[in-house]
Amino acid sequence: MTEQTHTKRVFSGIKPSGGLTLGNYLGAIKRFVDTQDSGVETLYCVVDLHAITVWQDPAQLRYATRELVAAYVAAGLDPAKSILFNQSQVSAHAELGWLFNCVARMGWMNRMTQFKDKAGKNAEKVSLGLYAYPSLMAADILVYHATHVPVGEDQKQHVELTRDIAAKFNNDFGVPGFFPMPEPVIEGPATRVMNLRDATKKMSKSGESDMERINMTDDAETIAKKFKKARTDPDGIPGEVKGLDGRPEARNLVDIYAALSAQSVEAVVAEYAGAGWGAFKPALAELAVAKLAPISTEMARLMQAPDELDRILGQGAERAAAIATPNLHKAYDIVGFVRSR
Ligand code: AMP
Ligand code: TRP
Image 1 (cartoon, helix red, strand yellow):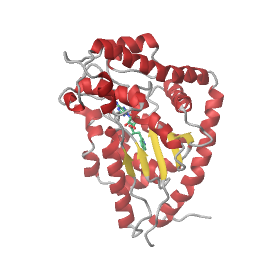
Image 2 (tube, helix red, strand yellow):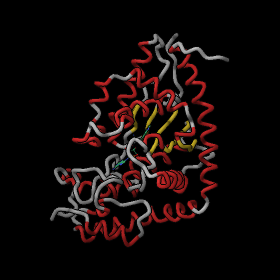
Image 3 (cartoon, helix red, strand yellow):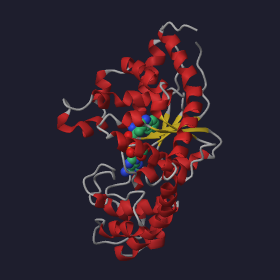
Image 4 (tube, helix red, strand yellow):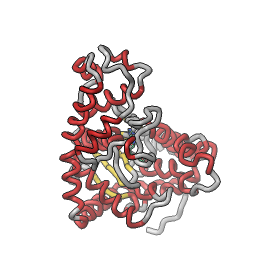
Protein backbone atom coordinates (compact mmCIF):
# COMPACT_ATOMS: atom_id res chain seq x y z
CA MET A 1 0.00 0.00 0.00
CA THR A 2 1.28 3.48 -0.78
CA GLU A 3 1.38 6.42 1.60
CA GLN A 4 -2.00 8.09 1.93
CA THR A 5 -2.65 11.73 2.53
CA HIS A 6 -5.31 12.38 5.08
CA THR A 7 -7.71 15.27 4.88
CA LYS A 8 -7.87 17.41 7.97
CA ARG A 9 -10.47 16.15 10.44
CA VAL A 10 -10.89 17.19 14.08
CA PHE A 11 -11.87 14.82 16.89
CA SER A 12 -12.07 15.35 20.64
CA GLY A 13 -13.97 14.04 23.62
CA ILE A 14 -14.88 14.72 27.23
CA LYS A 15 -15.85 12.20 29.90
CA PRO A 16 -19.39 12.42 31.30
CA SER A 17 -18.14 11.89 34.81
CA GLY A 18 -20.24 14.56 36.47
CA GLY A 19 -19.75 18.30 36.70
CA LEU A 20 -17.98 20.46 34.14
CA THR A 21 -15.38 22.98 35.23
CA LEU A 22 -14.02 26.21 33.84
CA GLY A 23 -11.00 24.05 32.89
CA ASN A 24 -13.18 21.89 30.64
CA TYR A 25 -14.76 25.00 29.18
CA LEU A 26 -11.58 26.94 28.43
CA GLY A 27 -9.28 23.98 27.74
CA ALA A 28 -11.75 22.08 25.58
CA ILE A 29 -15.36 23.16 24.87
CA LYS A 30 -14.66 26.81 23.97
CA ARG A 31 -11.89 25.69 21.64
CA PHE A 32 -14.18 23.10 20.03
CA VAL A 33 -16.59 25.94 19.27
CA ASP A 34 -13.75 28.03 17.83
CA THR A 35 -12.82 25.24 15.35
CA GLN A 36 -16.37 24.51 14.26
CA ASP A 37 -16.50 27.11 11.52
CA SER A 38 -13.03 26.46 10.16
CA GLY A 39 -14.47 24.54 7.22
CA VAL A 40 -13.09 21.25 8.53
CA GLU A 41 -15.15 18.23 9.63
CA THR A 42 -15.42 18.21 13.43
CA LEU A 43 -16.51 15.38 15.73
CA TYR A 44 -17.07 15.95 19.45
CA CYS A 45 -17.77 12.91 21.54
CA VAL A 46 -19.16 12.22 24.99
CA VAL A 47 -16.76 9.44 25.97
CA ASP A 48 -19.00 7.34 28.17
CA LEU A 49 -16.90 4.19 27.70
CA HIS A 50 -13.98 6.10 29.20
CA ALA A 51 -16.11 7.39 32.08
CA ILE A 52 -16.79 3.87 33.39
CA THR A 53 -13.07 3.12 33.83
CA VAL A 54 -13.88 4.37 37.33
CA TRP A 55 -17.20 3.65 39.03
CA GLN A 56 -20.17 5.67 37.76
CA ASP A 57 -23.61 5.44 39.22
CA PRO A 58 -25.85 4.50 36.23
CA ALA A 59 -28.45 7.23 36.81
CA GLN A 60 -25.66 9.78 37.29
CA LEU A 61 -23.96 8.62 34.10
CA ARG A 62 -27.16 9.13 32.09
CA TYR A 63 -27.56 12.58 33.63
CA ALA A 64 -23.93 13.57 33.03
CA THR A 65 -24.09 12.36 29.41
CA ARG A 66 -27.10 14.57 28.69
CA GLU A 67 -25.59 17.45 30.65
CA LEU A 68 -22.42 17.28 28.58
CA VAL A 69 -24.23 17.33 25.25
CA ALA A 70 -26.33 20.21 26.64
CA ALA A 71 -23.07 22.03 27.47
CA TYR A 72 -21.73 21.41 23.97
CA VAL A 73 -24.85 22.86 22.38
CA ALA A 74 -25.28 25.70 24.90
CA ALA A 75 -21.66 26.76 24.39
CA GLY A 76 -22.26 27.06 20.65
CA LEU A 77 -21.67 23.70 18.99
CA ASP A 78 -24.26 23.20 16.28
CA PRO A 79 -25.32 19.57 15.75
CA ALA A 80 -25.90 20.37 12.09
CA LYS A 81 -22.25 21.40 11.71
CA SER A 82 -20.34 19.27 14.22
CA ILE A 83 -21.02 15.60 14.80
CA LEU A 84 -22.05 15.36 18.47
CA PHE A 85 -22.51 11.85 19.84
CA ASN A 86 -21.74 9.45 22.65
CA GLN A 87 -19.06 6.83 22.24
CA SER A 88 -21.07 3.76 23.33
CA GLN A 89 -23.51 4.21 20.43
CA VAL A 90 -20.72 3.71 17.89
CA SER A 91 -19.38 0.22 18.52
CA ALA A 92 -16.40 0.70 16.21
CA HIS A 93 -14.61 2.57 19.03
CA ALA A 94 -14.58 -0.45 21.33
CA GLU A 95 -13.77 -2.80 18.45
CA LEU A 96 -10.77 -0.84 17.20
CA GLY A 97 -9.81 -0.35 20.84
CA TRP A 98 -9.43 -4.11 21.11
CA LEU A 99 -7.12 -4.25 18.09
CA PHE A 100 -5.05 -1.52 19.71
CA ASN A 101 -4.89 -3.44 22.98
CA CYS A 102 -3.05 -6.02 20.92
CA VAL A 103 -0.78 -3.45 19.24
CA ALA A 104 0.16 -1.28 22.23
CA ARG A 105 2.77 -2.61 24.67
CA MET A 106 2.43 -2.94 28.44
CA GLY A 107 5.52 -0.78 28.84
CA TRP A 108 3.87 2.07 26.95
CA MET A 109 0.87 2.02 29.28
CA ASN A 110 3.16 1.90 32.31
CA ARG A 111 4.57 5.28 31.33
CA MET A 112 1.21 7.08 31.27
CA THR A 113 1.22 9.77 33.94
CA GLN A 114 -2.60 10.04 34.07
CA PHE A 115 -2.80 6.36 34.97
CA LYS A 116 -0.14 6.76 37.65
CA ASP A 117 -1.95 9.79 39.09
CA LYS A 118 -5.35 8.11 39.08
CA ALA A 119 -4.19 4.73 40.30
CA GLY A 120 -1.84 6.14 42.92
CA LYS A 121 -0.68 3.49 45.37
CA ASN A 122 -3.74 1.46 44.50
CA ALA A 123 -2.62 0.14 41.10
CA GLU A 124 -3.58 -3.47 41.92
CA LYS A 125 -7.16 -2.53 42.67
CA VAL A 126 -8.09 -0.23 39.78
CA SER A 127 -10.01 -1.54 36.77
CA LEU A 128 -8.28 -3.11 33.82
CA GLY A 129 -10.16 -0.52 31.75
CA LEU A 130 -8.34 2.34 33.48
CA TYR A 131 -5.04 0.79 32.41
CA ALA A 132 -6.18 0.28 28.80
CA TYR A 133 -7.80 3.76 28.69
CA PRO A 134 -5.19 5.32 26.34
CA SER A 135 -5.58 2.51 23.83
CA LEU A 136 -9.34 3.18 23.59
CA MET A 137 -8.58 6.89 23.26
CA ALA A 138 -6.30 6.09 20.33
CA ALA A 139 -9.18 4.16 18.76
CA ASP A 140 -11.53 7.15 19.25
CA ILE A 141 -9.22 9.31 17.22
CA LEU A 142 -7.95 6.84 14.64
CA VAL A 143 -11.27 5.18 13.79
CA TYR A 144 -12.06 8.50 12.06
CA HIS A 145 -8.52 8.90 10.70
CA ALA A 146 -8.66 12.23 12.54
CA THR A 147 -5.65 14.48 12.12
CA HIS A 148 -6.15 17.13 14.82
CA VAL A 149 -7.11 16.72 18.46
CA PRO A 150 -7.88 19.87 20.50
CA VAL A 151 -7.26 19.06 24.17
CA GLY A 152 -5.87 20.53 27.37
CA GLU A 153 -2.19 20.10 28.22
CA ASP A 154 -2.87 17.02 30.40
CA GLN A 155 -3.86 14.97 27.33
CA LYS A 156 -0.70 15.57 25.31
CA GLN A 157 0.91 12.30 26.37
CA HIS A 158 -2.18 10.33 25.33
CA VAL A 159 -2.19 11.88 21.86
CA GLU A 160 1.51 11.11 21.53
CA LEU A 161 0.78 7.50 22.46
CA THR A 162 -1.93 7.50 19.78
CA ARG A 163 0.79 8.36 17.27
CA ASP A 164 2.94 5.50 18.54
CA ILE A 165 0.04 3.08 18.15
CA ALA A 166 -0.73 4.36 14.63
CA ALA A 167 2.92 4.03 13.64
CA LYS A 168 3.25 0.51 15.04
CA PHE A 169 0.05 -0.68 13.34
CA ASN A 170 1.10 0.84 10.00
CA ASN A 171 4.54 -0.70 10.35
CA ASP A 172 3.57 -4.16 11.69
CA PHE A 173 1.05 -4.71 8.91
CA GLY A 174 3.02 -3.00 6.15
CA VAL A 175 0.42 -0.33 5.49
CA PRO A 176 2.36 2.95 5.56
CA GLY A 177 0.10 5.96 6.04
CA PHE A 178 -3.04 3.88 6.71
CA PHE A 179 -3.55 5.60 10.04
CA PRO A 180 -2.56 9.28 10.14
CA MET A 181 -0.26 10.73 12.80
CA PRO A 182 -2.73 12.93 14.68
CA GLU A 183 -1.53 16.14 16.24
CA PRO A 184 -2.54 17.44 19.64
CA VAL A 185 -3.77 21.02 19.33
CA ILE A 186 -2.89 22.75 22.58
CA GLU A 187 -3.12 26.50 22.18
CA GLY A 188 -4.11 29.66 24.00
CA PRO A 189 -3.62 30.89 27.56
CA ALA A 190 -5.87 28.29 29.23
CA THR A 191 -4.58 24.89 28.20
CA ARG A 192 -3.96 24.20 31.88
CA VAL A 193 -6.38 25.95 34.22
CA MET A 194 -5.16 25.47 37.78
CA ASN A 195 -6.89 24.77 41.08
CA LEU A 196 -7.93 28.04 42.80
CA ARG A 197 -6.68 26.90 46.21
CA ASP A 198 -3.47 25.19 45.09
CA ALA A 199 -2.04 26.33 41.79
CA THR A 200 0.34 23.37 41.59
CA LYS A 201 -2.67 21.15 40.75
CA LYS A 202 -4.98 21.39 37.76
CA MET A 203 -8.59 22.43 38.24
CA SER A 204 -10.58 19.22 38.14
CA LYS A 205 -14.13 18.04 38.62
CA SER A 206 -12.95 15.40 41.07
CA GLY A 207 -10.99 17.59 43.51
CA GLU A 208 -12.10 17.41 47.17
CA SER A 209 -13.28 20.96 47.74
CA ASP A 210 -15.79 22.80 45.59
CA MET A 211 -13.97 26.06 46.41
CA GLU A 212 -11.01 24.99 44.29
CA ARG A 213 -12.92 25.02 41.00
CA ILE A 214 -15.47 27.04 39.07
CA ASN A 215 -18.25 24.83 37.73
CA MET A 216 -19.93 25.76 34.48
CA THR A 217 -23.24 25.73 36.35
CA ASP A 218 -22.18 27.89 39.34
CA ASP A 219 -24.34 30.97 39.89
CA ALA A 220 -22.98 34.52 39.91
CA GLU A 221 -22.69 34.73 43.69
CA THR A 222 -20.78 31.45 43.93
CA ILE A 223 -18.38 32.44 41.15
CA ALA A 224 -17.68 35.79 42.85
CA LYS A 225 -17.11 34.07 46.21
CA LYS A 226 -14.74 31.47 44.74
CA PHE A 227 -12.59 34.04 42.96
CA LYS A 228 -12.58 36.26 46.05
CA LYS A 229 -11.28 33.36 48.14
CA ALA A 230 -8.85 32.17 45.46
CA ARG A 231 -5.31 32.01 46.81
CA THR A 232 -3.01 34.81 45.62
CA ASP A 233 0.16 36.49 46.77
CA PRO A 234 0.56 39.98 48.28
CA ASP A 235 1.71 41.54 44.98
CA GLY A 236 -0.95 42.61 42.53
CA ILE A 237 -0.86 42.63 38.73
CA PRO A 238 2.68 43.34 37.50
CA GLY A 239 3.62 45.82 34.80
CA GLU A 240 4.76 43.09 32.43
CA VAL A 241 4.18 39.37 31.85
CA LYS A 242 7.61 38.47 33.22
CA GLY A 243 6.39 39.72 36.59
CA LEU A 244 4.14 36.64 36.76
CA ASP A 245 7.09 34.24 36.71
CA GLY A 246 7.24 32.07 39.80
CA ARG A 247 3.75 33.22 40.84
CA PRO A 248 1.50 30.32 39.77
CA GLU A 249 -1.65 31.62 41.50
CA ALA A 250 -1.35 35.06 39.94
CA ARG A 251 -0.50 33.57 36.57
CA ASN A 252 -3.54 31.32 36.70
CA LEU A 253 -6.01 34.16 37.36
CA VAL A 254 -4.49 36.30 34.63
CA ASP A 255 -4.55 33.35 32.20
CA ILE A 256 -8.21 32.73 32.97
CA TYR A 257 -9.02 36.39 32.38
CA ALA A 258 -7.13 36.34 29.08
CA ALA A 259 -8.88 33.19 27.86
CA LEU A 260 -12.34 34.39 28.86
CA SER A 261 -11.87 37.76 27.21
CA ALA A 262 -10.08 36.27 24.16
CA GLN A 263 -7.10 38.57 24.72
CA SER A 264 -3.41 37.86 25.10
CA VAL A 265 -1.87 37.70 28.57
CA GLU A 266 0.20 40.74 27.54
CA ALA A 267 -2.96 42.76 26.87
CA VAL A 268 -4.49 41.83 30.24
CA VAL A 269 -1.32 42.74 32.13
CA ALA A 270 -1.13 46.03 30.26
CA GLU A 271 -4.74 46.86 31.13
CA TYR A 272 -4.43 46.01 34.84
CA ALA A 273 -0.79 46.94 35.51
CA GLY A 274 -0.44 47.94 39.15
CA ALA A 275 -3.97 46.89 40.15
CA GLY A 276 -4.41 44.96 43.40
CA TRP A 277 -6.38 41.74 43.75
CA GLY A 278 -9.21 43.71 45.34
CA ALA A 279 -9.80 45.29 41.93
CA PHE A 280 -8.81 42.41 39.66
CA LYS A 281 -10.79 39.61 41.28
CA PRO A 282 -14.22 41.29 41.01
CA ALA A 283 -13.48 42.17 37.37
CA LEU A 284 -12.55 38.55 36.73
CA ALA A 285 -15.70 37.30 38.44
CA GLU A 286 -17.85 39.68 36.43
CA LEU A 287 -16.25 38.51 33.21
CA ALA A 288 -16.67 34.83 34.13
CA VAL A 289 -20.34 35.37 34.99
CA ALA A 290 -20.92 37.26 31.73
CA LYS A 291 -19.47 34.33 29.75
CA LEU A 292 -20.82 31.39 31.76
CA ALA A 293 -24.30 32.55 32.82
CA PRO A 294 -25.86 32.46 29.33
CA ILE A 295 -24.38 28.99 28.81
CA SER A 296 -25.63 27.57 32.10
CA THR A 297 -29.09 29.10 31.56
CA GLU A 298 -29.26 27.45 28.15
CA MET A 299 -27.95 24.16 29.59
CA ALA A 300 -30.74 24.18 32.17
CA ARG A 301 -33.30 24.83 29.44
CA LEU A 302 -31.95 22.00 27.28
CA MET A 303 -31.95 19.62 30.25
CA GLN A 304 -35.73 20.06 30.39
CA ALA A 305 -35.91 18.26 27.03
CA PRO A 306 -33.89 15.05 27.46
CA ASP A 307 -35.56 13.47 24.42
CA GLU A 308 -34.21 16.23 22.25
CA LEU A 309 -30.71 15.70 23.67
CA ASP A 310 -30.97 11.95 23.05
CA ARG A 311 -32.09 12.66 19.50
CA ILE A 312 -29.00 14.83 18.91
CA LEU A 313 -26.77 12.04 20.23
CA GLY A 314 -28.54 9.41 18.13
CA GLN A 315 -28.30 11.37 14.91
CA GLY A 316 -24.67 12.22 15.61
CA ALA A 317 -23.92 8.56 16.28
CA GLU A 318 -25.38 7.58 12.92
CA ARG A 319 -23.23 10.09 11.10
CA ALA A 320 -20.18 9.07 13.14
CA ALA A 321 -20.75 5.36 12.45
CA ALA A 322 -21.00 6.07 8.71
CA ILE A 323 -17.35 7.19 8.86
CA ALA A 324 -16.10 4.79 11.54
CA THR A 325 -17.51 1.45 10.35
CA PRO A 326 -15.86 1.38 6.89
CA ASN A 327 -12.55 2.41 8.50
CA LEU A 328 -12.89 -0.36 11.08
CA HIS A 329 -13.61 -2.90 8.34
CA LYS A 330 -10.48 -1.83 6.46
CA ALA A 331 -8.48 -2.36 9.64
CA TYR A 332 -10.09 -5.82 10.11
CA ASP A 333 -9.15 -6.77 6.55
CA ILE A 334 -5.59 -5.58 7.11
CA VAL A 335 -5.31 -7.68 10.27
CA GLY A 336 -6.58 -10.76 8.43
CA PHE A 337 -10.03 -11.25 9.95
CA VAL A 338 -12.44 -13.08 7.69
CA ARG A 339 -15.50 -10.95 7.08
CA SER A 340 -18.56 -12.47 5.41
CA ARG A 341 -19.99 -9.98 2.96
P1 AMP B 1 -12.02 15.38 31.21
O1 AMP B 1 -12.98 16.16 32.01
O2 AMP B 1 -10.88 14.86 32.01
O3 AMP B 1 -12.66 14.34 30.32
O4 AMP B 1 -11.31 16.41 30.24
C1 AMP B 1 -11.93 16.85 29.06
C2 AMP B 1 -11.12 17.91 28.35
O5 AMP B 1 -11.00 19.06 29.19
C3 AMP B 1 -9.70 17.49 27.97
O6 AMP B 1 -9.36 18.06 26.72
C4 AMP B 1 -8.89 18.10 29.07
O7 AMP B 1 -7.56 18.35 28.65
C5 AMP B 1 -9.63 19.40 29.31
N1 AMP B 1 -9.39 19.87 30.68
C6 AMP B 1 -9.83 19.29 31.84
N2 AMP B 1 -9.39 19.98 32.91
C7 AMP B 1 -8.68 21.03 32.42
C8 AMP B 1 -7.97 22.12 33.02
N3 AMP B 1 -7.92 22.27 34.34
N4 AMP B 1 -7.35 23.01 32.22
C9 AMP B 1 -7.40 22.88 30.86
N5 AMP B 1 -8.05 21.88 30.23
C10 AMP B 1 -8.68 20.96 31.00
N1 TRP C 1 -8.82 11.27 27.84
C1 TRP C 1 -9.54 12.49 27.61
C2 TRP C 1 -9.64 13.24 28.96
O1 TRP C 1 -9.56 12.68 30.00
C3 TRP C 1 -10.92 12.24 27.06
C4 TRP C 1 -10.84 11.57 25.73
C5 TRP C 1 -11.19 10.29 25.44
C6 TRP C 1 -10.39 12.16 24.51
N2 TRP C 1 -11.01 10.04 24.12
C7 TRP C 1 -10.51 11.13 23.52
C8 TRP C 1 -9.88 13.41 24.17
C9 TRP C 1 -10.14 11.36 22.20
C10 TRP C 1 -9.51 13.62 22.85
C11 TRP C 1 -9.63 12.60 21.88
O2 TRP C 1 -9.80 14.41 28.95
